[in-house]
Length: 316
Length: 289
Image 1 (cartoon, rainbow over the protein chains, first blue to last red):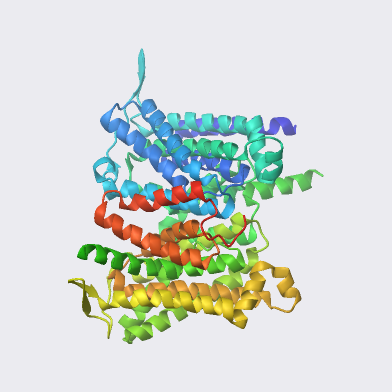
Image 2: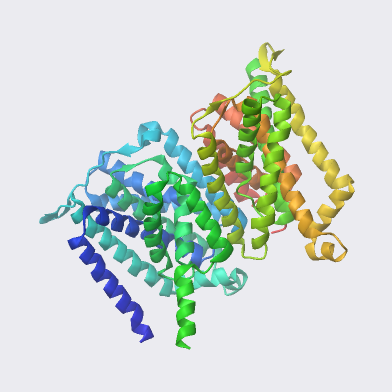
């Protein structure tokens, strides 16, 4: 029963998401896409945070790089969305490789500090390179071209059409990350989190694995950023700001960083909470900080973590 | 030649503000083993509170410099006593995240109370003029800052190395349990060190009010990034490293802006990358990890 439960949940969730695409209003569609994009960002981030035990405060830089990648590709090269997304992911991965090369030399405190500092370097770079990135205005008015696959074309101009592209990438990311966690590579990452000295003694290059985890999670952040650009049709340097790096952290914590589905559940709650709070106040970030504080002080397992504990107790 | 002197002077005075923030950061880390992301927020709060004293209480600038940071001390006390104390025993990410949440909260509170825009700043009584150095005018206030920074460094060194307090602090930093066993009230001392560190940072902020000319909510994050670079270069936990590092970063920024304006912000990061490759633990690391 237990073995099949996750498959059943996944199948039901997919059916619901397809149903949402058919029957919902534009607003619900938009929110659903925001949830899925944030979930890709947070799932990728959690490879590093929950799995490898490294706390990065600079992942917004990769998210923004993905966005700028698509925008620049669409402005100067081609409007093909898949090409743009590919460019965005590759650009984010390369940046993650460069920044990660320096950051993985340290863990814990230094690592958090370095990722924040390098992330802000990317932010100020995007802010200052006015000719390329449009400075603080960012790049806006990026059109969604159609996906041409040789013989036939798929239009994604309308939100109801674009929704399925987001759903496709979301499902792909879930499957991929699930596979990563089950692969020997994913197990080594968990080993590094539990005891990196012992992992090193087992003959595995801990730094190389950390760097690989950093690049993989950076690439997923790039994918999320690319999809986000196609959804919003603009990107500004604030996508790379450290306060945006806090989003996947909070999402993972809210959902439960030691669980697979935690970041997904966290994303739903995050987007919903934000919609509600922004109805009556502009100071969303203040509430964001207070929620983070409350989780750290009293609710560290997250929602999925607590629910699992509850279920386990129940089944005994 | 004249301009070179002035570039140096500007760099040194800018470095002194970074030093005041980095000193508190590294002191708190050395004793409490907590990296306080919110340290830049204390700097920002110090500046805004000092400004408020001047503007709305109509006090003298120097009284504002005393009162503003004192108010920040109260904030620091509350943070340590009621929040940080809960997470000392937890895993490290939670400590980092707690101070990170505080950055979000303080930033947003400052935006709510004082507004997101910039507000003009007043002039300093007694030090508002300028003196002629190497053929050009240089603000007297900046000269005062250049003298004040090393003075703080000297005072810190004297407190830590020569006083009874300093011995207790150093003892607790090197072995918390042992210090507690011989009768040091470690929790109170942690609070004291945290409040003192917050005061140093807020003092930097208050003194920066006439220097920066206008206050923005981004000033905290700008200085904390610089302070991070400084402690990476100097080594976390080392005051000597923080002082020399801050001086160096100040000069580097100043020379960068003057001679390589297109890449000036990169220089510090290139330097940081180089130090990480060459000496990952920094030049004067007080921590053995």
